[in-house]
Length: 287
Length: 279
Ligand code: HEM
Ligand code: SF4
Ligand code: SF4
Ligand code: FES
Image (cartoon, rainbow over all chains, first blue to last red; front, top):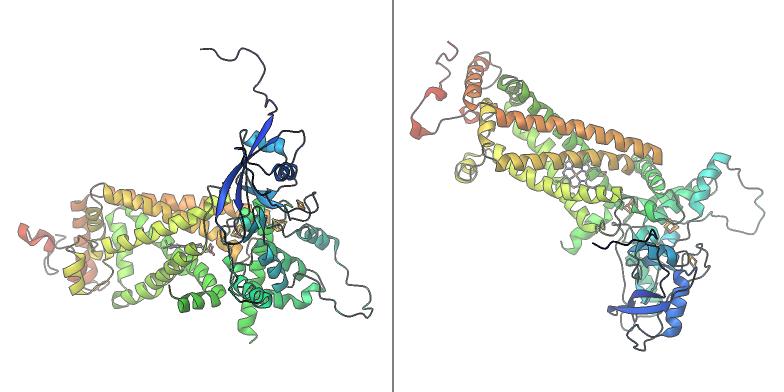
Protein backbone atom coordinates (compact mmCIF):
# COMPACT_ATOMS: atom_id res chain seq x y z
CA UNK A 1 0.00 0.00 0.00
CA UNK A 2 1.52 3.27 -0.99
CA UNK A 3 0.22 5.88 1.38
CA UNK A 4 1.54 9.42 1.03
CA UNK A 5 4.97 9.51 2.57
CA UNK A 6 5.36 13.24 3.01
CA UNK A 7 4.42 14.73 6.33
CA UNK A 8 2.78 17.41 4.22
CA UNK A 9 -0.89 17.43 5.25
CA UNK A 10 -3.52 17.44 2.57
CA UNK A 11 -3.31 21.18 2.35
CA UNK A 12 -6.07 22.71 0.30
CA UNK A 13 -3.80 23.31 -2.58
CA UNK A 14 -5.10 26.56 -3.99
CA UNK A 15 -7.28 25.55 -6.88
CA UNK A 16 -6.67 27.28 -10.18
CA UNK A 17 -10.30 27.25 -11.11
CA UNK A 18 -13.52 27.41 -9.14
CA UNK A 19 -16.50 25.43 -10.35
CA UNK A 20 -19.85 27.08 -9.74
CA UNK A 21 -23.24 25.49 -10.30
CA UNK A 22 -26.06 27.99 -10.59
CA UNK A 23 -29.80 27.47 -10.62
CA UNK A 24 -30.99 29.93 -13.23
CA UNK A 25 -34.41 31.17 -14.25
CA UNK A 26 -35.10 33.56 -17.13
CA UNK A 27 -38.03 35.34 -15.56
CA UNK A 28 -40.99 35.09 -13.18
CA UNK A 29 -42.89 31.87 -13.64
CA UNK A 30 -40.31 30.45 -16.07
CA UNK A 31 -38.80 27.00 -15.53
CA UNK A 32 -35.48 26.88 -13.72
CA UNK A 33 -32.37 25.10 -14.97
CA UNK A 34 -28.83 24.36 -13.77
CA UNK A 35 -25.80 25.84 -15.43
CA UNK A 36 -22.08 25.24 -14.76
CA UNK A 37 -19.56 28.05 -14.77
CA UNK A 38 -15.88 28.25 -14.00
CA UNK A 39 -13.79 31.23 -12.90
CA UNK A 40 -10.11 31.69 -12.10
CA UNK A 41 -9.28 31.48 -8.43
CA UNK A 42 -8.08 34.67 -6.76
CA UNK A 43 -7.27 35.28 -3.14
CA UNK A 44 -9.95 36.59 -0.76
CA UNK A 45 -12.83 36.19 -3.15
CA UNK A 46 -16.39 36.34 -1.98
CA UNK A 47 -19.44 35.14 -3.87
CA UNK A 48 -20.14 38.62 -5.21
CA UNK A 49 -16.71 38.78 -6.84
CA UNK A 50 -17.22 35.30 -8.26
CA UNK A 51 -20.56 36.41 -9.68
CA UNK A 52 -18.94 39.50 -11.20
CA UNK A 53 -16.48 37.31 -13.09
CA UNK A 54 -19.24 34.95 -14.15
CA UNK A 55 -21.36 37.79 -15.49
CA UNK A 56 -18.49 39.29 -17.44
CA UNK A 57 -17.56 35.93 -18.99
CA UNK A 58 -21.18 35.17 -19.89
CA UNK A 59 -20.06 31.69 -20.92
CA UNK A 60 -20.66 28.29 -19.36
CA UNK A 61 -17.90 25.82 -18.59
CA UNK A 62 -18.82 23.99 -21.78
CA UNK A 63 -18.05 27.18 -23.69
CA UNK A 64 -21.63 28.04 -24.51
CA UNK A 65 -22.44 31.76 -24.75
CA UNK A 66 -25.18 32.68 -22.28
CA UNK A 67 -26.84 35.78 -20.92
CA UNK A 68 -25.02 37.14 -17.85
CA UNK A 69 -26.24 35.63 -14.59
CA UNK A 70 -28.29 38.22 -12.67
CA UNK A 71 -27.96 38.82 -8.93
CA UNK A 72 -28.57 41.61 -6.46
CA UNK A 73 -26.38 43.40 -3.96
CA UNK A 74 -26.11 46.73 -2.19
CA UNK A 75 -23.98 47.45 0.83
CA UNK A 76 -21.39 44.68 0.36
CA UNK A 77 -20.99 44.52 4.14
CA UNK A 78 -23.91 42.41 5.34
CA UNK A 79 -26.25 45.20 6.33
CA UNK A 80 -28.73 45.55 3.47
CA UNK A 81 -29.75 41.95 2.88
CA UNK A 82 -30.16 42.37 -0.87
CA UNK A 83 -27.59 39.72 -1.80
CA UNK A 84 -29.16 36.86 0.17
CA UNK A 85 -29.20 33.49 -1.62
CA UNK A 86 -28.85 29.77 -0.92
CA UNK A 87 -25.16 28.90 -1.02
CA UNK A 88 -24.18 25.24 -0.73
CA UNK A 89 -27.66 24.48 0.57
CA UNK A 90 -27.66 27.10 3.30
CA UNK A 91 -29.18 30.55 3.06
CA UNK A 92 -26.77 33.45 3.65
CA UNK A 93 -25.46 36.75 2.26
CA UNK A 94 -23.26 36.33 -0.78
CA UNK A 95 -21.20 39.43 0.07
CA UNK A 96 -19.99 37.86 3.32
CA UNK A 97 -19.69 34.31 1.97
CA UNK A 98 -15.96 33.82 1.52
CA UNK A 99 -14.82 31.47 -1.20
CA UNK A 100 -11.91 30.02 0.78
CA UNK A 101 -14.24 29.00 3.56
CA UNK A 102 -16.83 27.58 1.16
CA UNK A 103 -14.18 25.48 -0.55
CA UNK A 104 -13.20 24.09 2.82
CA UNK A 105 -16.80 22.96 3.33
CA UNK A 106 -17.08 21.52 -0.13
CA UNK A 107 -13.88 21.40 -2.16
CA UNK A 108 -15.05 20.65 -5.68
CA UNK A 109 -17.88 23.02 -6.34
CA UNK A 110 -19.93 25.94 -5.08
CA UNK A 111 -23.66 25.72 -5.56
CA UNK A 112 -25.81 28.87 -5.85
CA UNK A 113 -29.58 28.94 -5.80
CA UNK A 114 -32.06 31.79 -5.38
CA UNK A 115 -34.07 31.77 -2.16
CA UNK A 116 -36.91 29.29 -2.52
CA UNK A 117 -39.60 31.13 -0.57
CA UNK A 118 -39.84 34.20 -2.78
CA UNK A 119 -40.82 34.72 -6.42
CA UNK A 120 -37.74 34.73 -8.64
CA UNK A 121 -37.30 37.88 -10.70
CA UNK A 122 -34.35 36.53 -12.64
CA UNK A 123 -31.63 33.98 -11.81
CA UNK A 124 -30.49 34.73 -8.26
CA UNK A 125 -32.64 37.83 -7.80
CA UNK A 126 -35.84 37.39 -5.83
CA UNK A 127 -38.72 39.64 -4.83
CA UNK A 128 -38.95 40.01 -1.03
CA UNK A 129 -42.01 42.24 -1.25
CA UNK A 130 -44.00 39.91 0.99
CA UNK A 131 -41.60 40.67 3.86
CA UNK A 132 -41.86 44.43 3.39
CA UNK A 133 -45.63 44.25 3.11
CA UNK A 134 -45.71 42.28 6.36
CA UNK A 135 -43.59 44.93 8.08
CA UNK A 136 -46.18 47.49 6.98
CA UNK A 137 -49.00 45.31 8.28
CA UNK A 138 -47.43 45.00 11.74
CA UNK A 139 -46.61 48.74 11.64
CA UNK A 140 -42.95 48.21 12.41
CA UNK A 141 -42.27 51.82 13.30
CA UNK A 142 -42.77 54.39 16.04
CA UNK A 143 -45.87 56.38 15.12
CA UNK A 144 -44.95 60.07 15.42
CA UNK A 145 -46.82 62.01 12.77
CA UNK A 146 -47.02 65.77 12.44
CA UNK A 147 -44.61 68.71 12.39
CA UNK A 148 -45.16 70.16 15.85
CA UNK A 149 -42.49 69.83 18.50
CA UNK A 150 -43.66 67.06 20.81
CA UNK A 151 -40.86 67.55 23.31
CA UNK A 152 -38.32 64.94 24.29
CA UNK A 153 -39.36 61.33 23.96
CA UNK A 154 -39.75 59.00 26.92
CA UNK A 155 -36.60 57.51 28.42
CA UNK A 156 -35.77 53.85 27.90
CA UNK A 157 -34.03 52.03 30.68
CA UNK A 158 -30.56 50.76 29.98
CA UNK A 159 -31.76 47.16 30.29
CA UNK A 160 -34.55 47.79 27.81
CA UNK A 161 -32.14 49.38 25.38
CA UNK A 162 -29.88 46.40 25.60
CA UNK A 163 -32.75 44.08 24.92
CA UNK A 164 -34.05 46.14 21.99
CA UNK A 165 -30.81 46.91 20.22
CA UNK A 166 -30.18 43.42 18.82
CA UNK A 167 -33.72 43.28 17.45
CA UNK A 168 -33.20 46.58 15.65
CA UNK A 169 -30.34 45.07 13.61
CA UNK A 170 -32.72 43.14 11.36
CA UNK A 171 -32.12 43.89 7.67
CA UNK A 172 -35.17 42.01 6.33
CA UNK A 173 -32.76 39.78 4.42
CA UNK A 174 -35.10 36.79 4.47
CA UNK A 175 -32.72 34.12 5.83
CA UNK A 176 -35.05 33.38 8.76
CA UNK A 177 -38.10 32.78 6.60
CA UNK A 178 -36.14 30.92 3.93
CA UNK A 179 -35.07 28.33 6.53
CA UNK A 180 -38.49 28.22 8.23
CA UNK A 181 -40.49 25.05 7.53
CA UNK A 182 -43.71 26.91 8.29
CA UNK A 183 -43.07 29.77 5.83
CA UNK A 184 -44.09 28.55 2.41
CA UNK A 185 -43.66 30.27 -0.91
CA UNK A 186 -46.45 32.49 -2.22
CA UNK A 187 -46.16 33.61 -5.81
CA UNK A 188 -48.89 35.64 -7.45
CA UNK A 189 -48.83 35.67 -11.23
CA UNK A 190 -50.04 38.64 -13.16
CA UNK A 191 -53.34 38.19 -14.95
CA UNK A 192 -53.69 39.40 -18.51
CA UNK A 193 -55.07 42.94 -18.61
CA UNK A 194 -54.42 43.57 -14.92
CA UNK A 195 -53.18 47.08 -14.05
CA UNK A 196 -50.18 47.59 -11.77
CA UNK A 197 -52.43 48.69 -8.93
CA UNK A 198 -54.75 45.73 -9.28
CA UNK A 199 -51.83 43.35 -9.38
CA UNK A 200 -50.23 44.96 -6.31
CA UNK A 201 -53.50 44.85 -4.46
CA UNK A 202 -53.97 41.18 -5.22
CA UNK A 203 -50.40 40.43 -4.14
CA UNK A 204 -50.93 42.23 -0.84
CA UNK A 205 -54.14 40.32 -0.16
CA UNK A 206 -52.60 36.99 -1.01
CA UNK A 207 -49.45 37.61 1.03
CA UNK A 208 -51.63 38.57 4.01
CA UNK A 209 -52.99 34.99 4.05
CA UNK A 210 -49.52 33.54 4.67
CA UNK A 211 -47.38 33.23 7.78
CA UNK A 212 -45.88 36.58 8.84
CA UNK A 213 -42.52 34.96 9.65
CA UNK A 214 -39.92 35.41 12.36
CA UNK A 215 -38.53 38.79 11.21
CA UNK A 216 -41.91 40.56 11.32
CA UNK A 217 -42.81 38.94 14.66
CA UNK A 218 -39.54 40.17 16.10
CA UNK A 219 -40.07 43.70 14.72
CA UNK A 220 -43.57 43.82 16.21
CA UNK A 221 -42.09 42.81 19.56
CA UNK A 222 -39.39 45.47 19.20
CA UNK A 223 -41.84 48.30 18.57
CA UNK A 224 -44.29 47.05 21.19
CA UNK A 225 -41.56 47.38 23.79
CA UNK A 226 -40.81 50.97 22.79
CA UNK A 227 -42.74 53.39 25.05
CA UNK A 228 -44.14 55.41 22.15
CA UNK A 229 -44.32 52.52 19.75
CA UNK A 230 -46.48 50.70 22.29
CA UNK A 231 -49.30 53.20 21.62
CA UNK A 232 -50.41 50.96 18.79
CA UNK A 233 -49.43 47.68 20.46
CA UNK A 234 -52.95 46.32 20.10
CA UNK A 235 -52.98 46.95 16.36
CA UNK A 236 -49.81 44.91 16.06
CA UNK A 237 -51.25 42.17 18.26
CA UNK A 238 -54.35 42.05 16.06
CA UNK A 239 -52.08 41.18 13.12
CA UNK A 240 -49.97 38.75 15.15
CA UNK A 241 -53.10 36.86 16.24
CA UNK A 242 -54.82 37.13 12.85
CA UNK A 243 -54.47 34.86 9.86
CA UNK A 244 -50.86 33.72 9.52
CA UNK A 245 -49.93 35.22 12.89
CA UNK A 246 -47.46 34.03 15.49
CA UNK A 247 -49.53 30.87 16.02
CA UNK A 248 -48.30 29.51 12.70
CA UNK A 249 -44.80 29.12 14.09
CA UNK A 250 -44.01 25.45 14.71
CA UNK A 251 -40.94 26.02 16.90
CA UNK A 252 -38.41 24.48 14.56
CA UNK A 253 -36.05 27.31 15.57
CA UNK A 254 -34.24 27.34 12.25
CA UNK A 255 -34.78 31.08 12.03
CA UNK A 256 -32.57 31.82 14.99
CA UNK A 257 -29.95 29.36 13.76
CA UNK A 258 -29.52 31.03 10.37
CA UNK A 259 -30.03 34.72 11.21
CA UNK A 260 -26.79 36.45 10.20
CA UNK A 261 -27.39 39.15 12.82
CA UNK A 262 -27.85 36.56 15.58
CA UNK A 263 -31.13 38.16 16.56
CA UNK A 264 -32.78 36.20 19.39
CA UNK A 265 -35.80 35.40 17.23
CA UNK A 266 -37.14 32.51 19.27
CA UNK A 267 -37.14 34.75 22.30
CA UNK A 268 -39.17 37.31 20.33
CA UNK A 269 -41.52 34.56 19.18
CA UNK A 270 -42.08 33.37 22.75
CA UNK A 271 -42.62 36.96 23.90
CA UNK A 272 -45.10 37.46 21.07
CA UNK A 273 -46.77 34.19 22.11
CA UNK A 274 -47.11 35.42 25.67
CA UNK A 275 -48.45 38.81 24.52
CA UNK A 276 -50.88 36.98 22.22
CA UNK A 277 -52.13 34.86 25.12
CA UNK A 278 -52.80 37.98 27.20
CA UNK A 279 -54.24 39.90 24.25
CA UNK A 280 -56.67 37.07 23.43
CA UNK A 281 -57.79 36.78 27.06
CA UNK A 282 -58.28 40.54 27.24
CA UNK A 283 -60.36 40.44 24.09
CA UNK A 284 -62.60 37.79 25.66
CA UNK A 285 -63.10 39.57 28.99
CA UNK A 286 -63.05 43.22 27.90
CA UNK A 287 -65.70 42.82 25.27
CA UNK B 1 -60.33 20.24 1.44
CA UNK B 2 -62.68 22.68 -0.22
CA UNK B 3 -62.28 26.44 -0.17
CA UNK B 4 -64.88 27.14 2.52
CA UNK B 5 -63.23 24.76 4.96
CA UNK B 6 -59.81 26.22 4.29
CA UNK B 7 -61.22 29.69 4.77
CA UNK B 8 -62.88 28.79 8.04
CA UNK B 9 -59.63 27.30 9.31
CA UNK B 10 -57.46 30.23 8.24
CA UNK B 11 -59.88 32.83 9.51
CA UNK B 12 -59.92 31.28 12.97
CA UNK B 13 -56.29 30.25 12.76
CA UNK B 14 -55.30 31.64 16.14
CA UNK B 15 -58.16 30.17 18.15
CA UNK B 16 -57.90 26.79 16.46
CA UNK B 17 -54.13 26.51 16.92
CA UNK B 18 -54.35 27.49 20.54
CA UNK B 19 -57.15 24.96 21.11
CA UNK B 20 -55.02 22.37 19.34
CA UNK B 21 -52.12 23.20 21.62
CA UNK B 22 -54.33 23.10 24.71
CA UNK B 23 -56.04 19.80 23.86
CA UNK B 24 -52.60 18.26 23.39
CA UNK B 25 -51.99 18.74 27.11
CA UNK B 26 -55.48 18.93 28.60
CA UNK B 27 -57.16 16.50 28.38
CA UNK B 28 -55.21 14.29 25.94
CA UNK B 29 -51.73 14.57 27.46
CA UNK B 30 -52.99 14.37 31.04
CA UNK B 31 -55.10 11.38 30.15
CA UNK B 32 -52.08 9.67 28.59
CA UNK B 33 -50.01 10.13 31.75
CA UNK B 34 -52.77 8.72 33.97
CA UNK B 35 -53.36 5.90 31.51
CA UNK B 36 -49.70 4.81 31.52
CA UNK B 37 -49.50 5.10 35.32
CA UNK B 38 -52.60 2.96 35.77
CA UNK B 39 -51.25 0.40 33.33
CA UNK B 40 -47.93 0.26 35.12
CA UNK B 41 -49.77 -0.87 38.26
CA UNK B 42 -49.80 -4.24 36.52
CA UNK B 43 -46.20 -4.55 37.70
CA UNK B 44 -47.70 -5.19 41.15
CA UNK B 45 -49.76 -8.08 39.86
CA UNK B 46 -53.17 -8.58 38.26
CA UNK B 47 -54.99 -7.77 41.50
CA UNK B 48 -53.56 -4.26 41.78
CA UNK B 49 -54.29 -3.60 38.13
CA UNK B 50 -57.83 -5.00 38.45
CA UNK B 51 -58.49 -2.69 41.41
CA UNK B 52 -57.58 0.35 39.28
CA UNK B 53 -59.64 -0.85 36.34
CA UNK B 54 -62.61 -1.47 38.64
CA UNK B 55 -62.24 2.06 39.92
CA UNK B 56 -62.51 3.37 36.37
CA UNK B 57 -65.42 1.10 35.52
CA UNK B 58 -67.29 2.08 38.66
CA UNK B 59 -68.38 5.03 36.51
CA UNK B 60 -70.68 2.47 34.92
CA UNK B 61 -73.11 4.00 32.47
CA UNK B 62 -71.32 7.35 32.54
CA UNK B 63 -68.12 5.79 31.26
CA UNK B 64 -68.83 5.94 27.51
CA UNK B 65 -69.86 9.58 27.92
CA UNK B 66 -66.66 10.40 29.78
CA UNK B 67 -64.63 8.47 27.22
CA UNK B 68 -66.09 10.33 24.26
CA UNK B 69 -66.31 13.78 25.80
CA UNK B 70 -62.94 13.92 27.52
CA UNK B 71 -60.79 11.53 25.55
CA UNK B 72 -61.94 10.55 22.07
CA UNK B 73 -63.39 13.85 20.86
CA UNK B 74 -60.51 16.06 22.05
CA UNK B 75 -58.06 13.51 20.63
CA UNK B 76 -59.84 13.43 17.28
CA UNK B 77 -59.88 17.24 17.21
CA UNK B 78 -56.15 17.37 18.03
CA UNK B 79 -55.40 14.73 15.39
CA UNK B 80 -57.47 16.31 12.60
CA UNK B 81 -56.04 19.78 13.21
CA UNK B 82 -52.62 18.18 13.64
CA UNK B 83 -52.80 16.75 10.13
CA UNK B 84 -53.89 20.15 8.81
CA UNK B 85 -50.90 21.76 10.57
CA UNK B 86 -48.52 19.14 9.19
CA UNK B 87 -49.76 19.86 5.70
CA UNK B 88 -49.32 23.60 6.19
CA UNK B 89 -45.54 23.26 6.63
CA UNK B 90 -42.71 21.67 4.71
CA UNK B 91 -40.00 19.91 6.69
CA UNK B 92 -36.41 20.67 5.69
CA UNK B 93 -34.18 18.60 7.94
CA UNK B 94 -32.20 17.42 4.93
CA UNK B 95 -31.04 20.99 4.38
CA UNK B 96 -30.95 22.41 7.92
CA UNK B 97 -29.78 19.65 10.25
CA UNK B 98 -30.24 21.41 13.55
CA UNK B 99 -31.41 19.57 16.65
CA UNK B 100 -34.50 21.71 17.09
CA UNK B 101 -35.40 21.28 13.45
CA UNK B 102 -35.24 17.52 13.95
CA UNK B 103 -37.53 17.90 16.92
CA UNK B 104 -39.96 19.85 14.73
CA UNK B 105 -39.92 17.07 12.14
CA UNK B 106 -40.15 14.31 14.74
CA UNK B 107 -43.10 16.08 16.39
CA UNK B 108 -44.89 15.63 13.08
CA UNK B 109 -43.79 12.06 12.38
CA UNK B 110 -44.66 10.91 15.90
CA UNK B 111 -48.03 12.63 15.52
CA UNK B 112 -48.75 10.54 12.44
CA UNK B 113 -47.55 7.35 14.17
CA UNK B 114 -49.75 8.30 17.15
CA UNK B 115 -52.87 8.48 14.97
CA UNK B 116 -52.21 5.06 13.48
CA UNK B 117 -51.19 3.57 16.80
CA UNK B 118 -54.09 4.97 18.80
CA UNK B 119 -56.63 4.01 16.14
CA UNK B 120 -55.56 0.37 16.17
CA UNK B 121 -54.82 0.27 19.89
CA UNK B 122 -58.34 1.39 20.78
CA UNK B 123 -59.80 -0.97 18.19
CA UNK B 124 -57.62 -3.87 19.36
CA UNK B 125 -58.54 -3.64 23.03
CA UNK B 126 -61.59 -1.41 23.44
CA UNK B 127 -63.34 -1.86 20.09
CA UNK B 128 -64.33 1.82 19.65
CA UNK B 129 -68.09 1.22 20.13
CA UNK B 130 -69.98 -0.87 22.68
CA UNK B 131 -72.95 -1.73 20.43
CA UNK B 132 -73.64 -5.44 20.19
CA UNK B 133 -74.04 -5.37 16.40
CA UNK B 134 -70.69 -3.65 15.97
CA UNK B 135 -68.90 -6.00 18.33
CA UNK B 136 -70.42 -9.17 16.87
CA UNK B 137 -70.13 -8.31 13.19
CA UNK B 138 -67.08 -6.09 12.93
CA UNK B 139 -64.80 -5.91 15.93
CA UNK B 140 -64.61 -9.55 17.09
CA UNK B 141 -64.47 -11.20 13.66
CA UNK B 142 -61.38 -9.08 13.02
CA UNK B 143 -59.86 -10.14 16.30
CA UNK B 144 -60.45 -6.75 17.90
CA UNK B 145 -62.16 -5.57 21.11
CA UNK B 146 -60.18 -8.04 23.18
CA UNK B 147 -60.11 -6.29 26.52
CA UNK B 148 -62.58 -7.41 29.19
CA UNK B 149 -62.51 -4.88 32.03
CA UNK B 150 -63.43 -7.42 34.72
CA UNK B 151 -60.69 -9.73 33.49
CA UNK B 152 -58.27 -6.90 32.86
CA UNK B 153 -54.77 -8.39 33.06
CA UNK B 154 -55.60 -11.80 31.61
CA UNK B 155 -57.40 -10.50 28.52
CA UNK B 156 -54.70 -7.87 28.02
CA UNK B 157 -51.95 -10.48 28.23
CA UNK B 158 -53.83 -12.74 25.82
CA UNK B 159 -54.27 -9.90 23.35
CA UNK B 160 -50.55 -9.13 23.43
CA UNK B 161 -49.38 -12.65 22.59
CA UNK B 162 -47.05 -13.17 19.67
CA UNK B 163 -44.37 -10.66 18.76
CA UNK B 164 -46.09 -8.28 16.33
CA UNK B 165 -48.43 -6.65 18.83
CA UNK B 166 -45.70 -6.05 21.44
CA UNK B 167 -43.50 -4.40 18.79
CA UNK B 168 -46.46 -2.29 17.65
CA UNK B 169 -47.13 -1.20 21.23
CA UNK B 170 -43.46 -0.50 21.85
CA UNK B 171 -43.23 1.83 18.85
CA UNK B 172 -46.54 3.44 19.74
CA UNK B 173 -45.56 4.16 23.32
CA UNK B 174 -42.15 5.57 22.36
CA UNK B 175 -43.71 7.88 19.77
CA UNK B 176 -46.56 9.08 21.98
CA UNK B 177 -44.21 9.79 24.88
CA UNK B 178 -41.79 11.75 22.67
CA UNK B 179 -44.71 13.65 21.17
CA UNK B 180 -46.04 14.62 24.57
CA UNK B 181 -42.69 15.52 26.12
CA UNK B 182 -41.55 17.58 23.13
CA UNK B 183 -45.06 18.99 22.80
CA UNK B 184 -44.98 20.36 26.32
CA UNK B 185 -41.72 22.10 25.49
CA UNK B 186 -43.11 23.74 22.34
CA UNK B 187 -46.29 24.54 24.20
CA UNK B 188 -44.32 26.60 26.70
CA UNK B 189 -43.02 28.71 23.80
CA UNK B 190 -46.40 28.87 22.08
CA UNK B 191 -48.11 30.27 25.17
CA UNK B 192 -45.10 32.31 26.25
CA UNK B 193 -44.28 30.47 29.47
CA UNK B 194 -40.55 30.14 28.77
CA UNK B 195 -39.26 33.00 26.64
CA UNK B 196 -35.52 33.49 27.14
CA UNK B 197 -32.97 31.25 25.55
CA UNK B 198 -31.88 30.00 28.97
CA UNK B 199 -35.41 29.27 30.12
CA UNK B 200 -36.11 27.40 26.88
CA UNK B 201 -32.97 25.29 27.31
CA UNK B 202 -33.88 24.57 30.93
CA UNK B 203 -37.42 23.61 29.99
CA UNK B 204 -36.03 21.39 27.28
CA UNK B 205 -33.98 19.45 29.83
CA UNK B 206 -36.93 19.17 32.21
CA UNK B 207 -39.19 17.90 29.41
CA UNK B 208 -36.52 15.42 28.39
CA UNK B 209 -36.18 14.03 31.91
CA UNK B 210 -39.96 13.91 32.31
CA UNK B 211 -40.24 12.13 28.98
CA UNK B 212 -37.66 9.50 29.96
CA UNK B 213 -39.53 8.96 33.23
CA UNK B 214 -42.84 8.53 31.43
CA UNK B 215 -41.21 6.21 28.91
CA UNK B 216 -39.98 3.98 31.73
CA UNK B 217 -43.50 3.93 33.19
CA UNK B 218 -45.04 3.09 29.82
CA UNK B 219 -42.56 0.40 28.89
CA UNK B 220 -42.74 -1.28 32.29
CA UNK B 221 -46.52 -1.47 31.84
CA UNK B 222 -45.95 -3.12 28.47
CA UNK B 223 -43.44 -5.62 29.80
CA UNK B 224 -45.70 -6.43 32.76
CA UNK B 225 -48.56 -7.10 30.34
CA UNK B 226 -46.45 -9.39 28.18
CA UNK B 227 -45.11 -11.41 31.11
CA UNK B 228 -48.45 -11.85 32.90
CA UNK B 229 -49.52 -15.47 33.49
CA UNK B 230 -52.98 -15.58 31.92
CA UNK B 231 -54.49 -18.45 33.93
CA UNK B 232 -53.22 -17.22 37.26
CA UNK B 233 -54.43 -13.69 36.52
CA UNK B 234 -57.86 -14.99 35.51
CA UNK B 235 -58.27 -16.81 38.80
CA UNK B 236 -57.47 -13.67 40.76
CA UNK B 237 -59.82 -11.58 38.61
CA UNK B 238 -62.72 -14.02 38.90
CA UNK B 239 -62.36 -14.12 42.66
CA UNK B 240 -62.27 -10.33 42.77
CA UNK B 241 -65.26 -10.08 40.49
CA UNK B 242 -67.41 -12.11 42.84
CA UNK B 243 -66.36 -10.13 45.89
CA UNK B 244 -66.82 -6.74 44.25
CA UNK B 245 -70.24 -7.61 42.87
CA UNK B 246 -71.29 -8.88 46.29
CA UNK B 247 -70.21 -5.67 47.99
CA UNK B 248 -71.85 -3.64 45.21
CA UNK B 249 -68.64 -1.89 44.17
CA UNK B 250 -69.07 -2.90 40.56
CA UNK B 251 -72.16 -3.70 38.55
CA UNK B 252 -72.68 -7.26 37.38
CA UNK B 253 -72.09 -7.03 33.66
CA UNK B 254 -71.20 -10.23 31.78
CA UNK B 255 -70.26 -8.15 28.74
CA UNK B 256 -67.21 -6.92 30.60
CA UNK B 257 -66.07 -10.44 31.53
CA UNK B 258 -64.05 -13.07 29.80
CA UNK B 259 -65.98 -16.02 28.38
CA UNK B 260 -64.15 -19.16 27.36
CA UNK B 261 -64.80 -20.17 23.75
CA UNK B 262 -67.92 -22.36 23.77
CA UNK B 263 -66.37 -25.25 21.85
CA UNK B 264 -64.12 -26.09 24.79
CA UNK B 265 -67.16 -26.60 26.95
CA UNK B 266 -65.09 -25.99 30.04
CA UNK B 267 -67.17 -23.85 32.34
CA UNK B 268 -64.77 -23.20 35.17
CA UNK B 269 -64.02 -19.69 33.92
CA UNK B 270 -67.67 -18.92 33.49
CA UNK B 271 -68.30 -19.15 37.18
CA UNK B 272 -71.68 -17.61 37.77
CA UNK B 273 -71.86 -15.12 40.62
CA UNK B 274 -73.80 -17.66 42.73
CA UNK B 275 -70.98 -20.13 42.68
CA UNK B 276 -68.47 -19.75 45.42
CA UNK B 277 -65.16 -19.28 43.66
CA UNK B 278 -63.01 -18.39 46.58
CA UNK B 279 -63.75 -21.50 48.58
C1 HEM C 1 -51.02 10.62 22.30
C2 HEM C 1 -51.75 11.56 21.91
C3 HEM C 1 -51.24 12.96 21.72
C4 HEM C 1 -50.76 13.81 22.68
C5 HEM C 1 -50.63 13.52 24.15
C6 HEM C 1 -50.40 15.03 22.03
C7 HEM C 1 -49.88 16.14 22.67
C8 HEM C 1 -49.41 17.26 22.04
C9 HEM C 1 -48.89 18.44 22.68
C10 HEM C 1 -48.80 18.67 24.17
C11 HEM C 1 -48.51 19.31 21.71
C12 HEM C 1 -47.87 20.67 21.91
C13 HEM C 1 -48.73 21.79 21.44
C14 HEM C 1 -47.96 23.06 21.16
O1 HEM C 1 -46.81 23.01 20.71
O2 HEM C 1 -48.49 24.13 21.40
C15 HEM C 1 -48.76 18.69 20.46
C16 HEM C 1 -48.46 19.26 19.25
C17 HEM C 1 -48.73 18.68 18.04
N1 HEM C 1 -49.45 17.51 17.84
FE1 HEM C 1 -50.06 16.23 19.25
N2 HEM C 1 -50.64 14.91 20.70
C18 HEM C 1 -51.16 13.66 20.48
C19 HEM C 1 -51.56 13.13 19.29
C20 HEM C 1 -51.38 13.75 18.07
C21 HEM C 1 -51.84 13.25 16.84
C22 HEM C 1 -52.61 11.96 16.65
C23 HEM C 1 -51.47 14.14 15.87
C24 HEM C 1 -51.76 14.05 14.42
C25 HEM C 1 -50.91 13.88 13.52
C26 HEM C 1 -50.74 15.20 16.51
C27 HEM C 1 -50.15 16.28 15.86
C28 HEM C 1 -49.52 17.32 16.48
C29 HEM C 1 -48.81 18.38 15.81
C30 HEM C 1 -48.65 18.56 14.30
C31 HEM C 1 -48.31 19.22 16.79
C32 HEM C 1 -47.46 20.49 16.57
C33 HEM C 1 -48.30 21.71 16.62
C34 HEM C 1 -47.50 22.95 16.40
O3 HEM C 1 -46.29 22.95 16.62
O4 HEM C 1 -48.08 23.97 16.03
N3 HEM C 1 -50.72 14.95 17.86
N4 HEM C 1 -49.34 17.46 20.68
S1 SF4 D 1 -34.36 38.45 11.54
FE1 SF4 D 1 -32.28 37.99 10.88
S2 SF4 D 1 -32.56 36.49 9.25
FE2 SF4 D 1 -34.53 37.43 9.57
S3 SF4 D 1 -34.64 39.07 8.12
FE3 SF4 D 1 -33.85 39.94 9.99
S4 SF4 D 1 -31.64 39.83 9.81
FE4 SF4 D 1 -32.49 38.48 8.26
S1 SF4 E 1 -39.21 28.90 15.21
FE1 SF4 E 1 -41.06 29.39 14.07
S2 SF4 E 1 -40.52 31.09 12.78
FE2 SF4 E 1 -38.60 30.16 13.47
S3 SF4 E 1 -38.08 28.72 11.85
FE3 SF4 E 1 -39.26 27.65 13.38
S4 SF4 E 1 -41.35 27.69 12.68
FE4 SF4 E 1 -40.22 29.26 11.58
S1 FES F 1 -24.84 43.30 -0.27
FE1 FES F 1 -25.87 44.09 1.48
S2 FES F 1 -25.94 42.33 2.70
FE2 FES F 1 -24.77 41.61 1.03
